Length: 378
Image 1 (tube, one colour):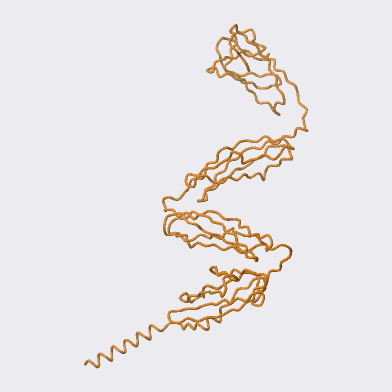
Image 2 (cartoon, helix red, strand yellow; image 1 turned 60 degrees about the horizontal axis):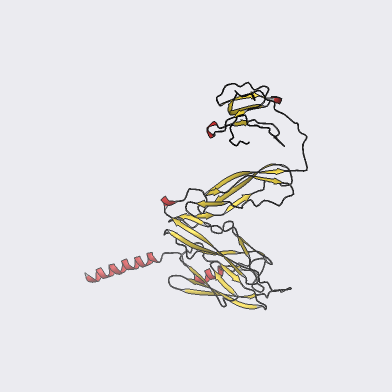
């Protein structure tokens, strides 16, 4: 009976073993043969001047681990899926090794490449690339990583456009906090530039939806020929979460060479992407052009006002100009020739009119109608 039971167990074990091994065969050597370096600009292993693209995964074989190793980090640095090339004064040979590992085995493949020397004309390149398009990020805890490279570029004074990489090893999207994300760009001479931004991880109910507040804006009056105004002087923006944030002034619609009224648009954006706008007017004046105008003398002949109370009203004056007044009395001998205003703050005395084309010059005549020695003025 024991022998029968033992044989049955052996058969079951063999069936289980066959079932466990019933997966597609993974020949590491075949997979190694499919891995190649990504050369740029039509280059090959015999003459490399640009960074190399490194395969870091094989489709359909997610359990295969791929590791890249450089024989000399001084000449080639491995950064994720990029082999950053540092050219020297002479040609140098470097070996890149790719290591494939599954659960049981490890295999290697070697790439011997020649990094071509720098072609030095004039002074040696010592200027690093300039990285642009970076910004801070705000994400909700537990979110997937945003596209950190969207809109980010780097330009070098000699090499033109160069690749940008980023290091997010300090960023933990599963824990609330503020983390550093580091951008990096390297030119062919090995000059390195880095730029650090913040990745702010917040709780779902703490997501910032309030835009910054812009203060200090005003309208501008500009005379053609004067220096360009400093539109940002005294202008600031404050956010409820990020504190002080940058302000931009868009003057693309302003033409300082042609008289007219133009919109100047201020904007400020916080880390969460909330943007506020303020629109002001730039009045451009051409003093060399003086349009012919008309001299109008208001006689108040059409004013019909009486009584000692300070009242408000309106009348149709010279050239059909519609005047409105407030805080005026009509019991003085000036009636018919002028208006008598009250001097108290409660009188709210005023005289207003809208005149087409504006006023180039205005003059007033006034006198003190009462015997009081109190000072008066306009």
